Image (cartoon, rainbow, N blue to C red; front, top):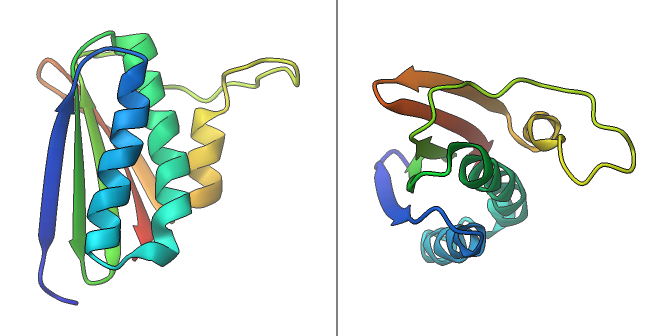
Length: 125
């Protein structure tokens, strides 16, 4: 598919927003018939959105794009600090988000923006 497709949603800074992001992405990817990428996208997006809610404590925008069978998810938040990898102890509940991205995404990155940042990742669609 060479035709580009895009959908987005804005979510409030609330714990329920990670679930709302997963629901949004599931609906969009099922509509686009990208079921084979669904679990990887949901896992990685859950980490990125949860981190944005916890650390940025701002509204979050989730954008999903499909072009040439590549799914790109972008999560915008209002925090200028960029995420940094860390070693989480085995009994820690957090600290593994970037490792999850490394394991499921074909590419990912972080871009500084005026008033915040964009964390993005791509998976084959």
